[in-house]
Image (cartoon, rainbow, N blue to C red; front, side, top):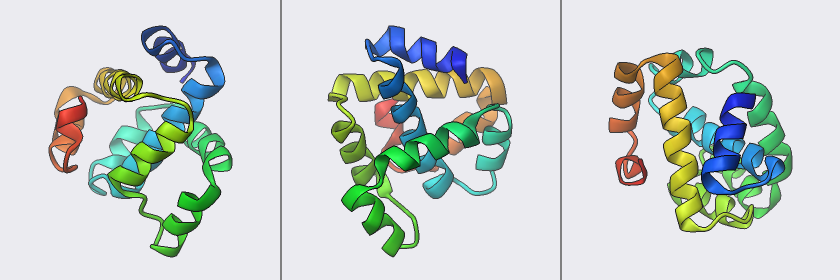
Length: 128
């Protein structure tokens, strides 16, 4: 994960803590709302994903964390975007972070698996 953090820091112009927070938010979204037959393959190919998701969860919390918990844990794309915005990212940085994560996941888990997952998450194609 340190390679991904460094790539995002460079590409999006983020500090390390913000980059780690953004990765955690997006990976939690994928874990909750992504296709459950493909997500485990992707997460297994990303060593450290669970730890960075836990970091992001501790920092995210707040109103949307509480609402997501009441709704069965699913944040949805809009709440995820709001969380990223609250973490200090603008829309271009969100797009950059998403592209870097997807690119890294393709390198680690394979294009076929990642592309199939992206195709089944509404609206994600427009970000990546």
